[in-house]
Image (cartoon, rainbow, N blue to C red; front, side, top):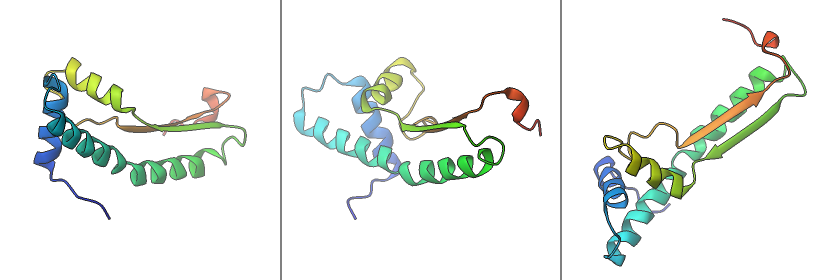
Length: 110
């Protein structure tokens, strides 16, 4: 297992990546390493959510389309720059999954 970073370290790394001009290469490398770690921490939860989504949707529609993704590094940094109050630690859409069904009528309303 690799290095584990604290929540404060994740937040500080996100601040550096959002605010800095990256002239300090060593600091950039460290902060990017923290970003890689933080993004990878979402992989297991994403896999579990994706599996659950498939289990729920397949009985409703066998031909549903499924997709999952982890947000790209550049998109994470871009979002940190766009939203002044955004922190890396509290970013809620680092991972996501979806199912596409042929009709809204196939989706239970409850």
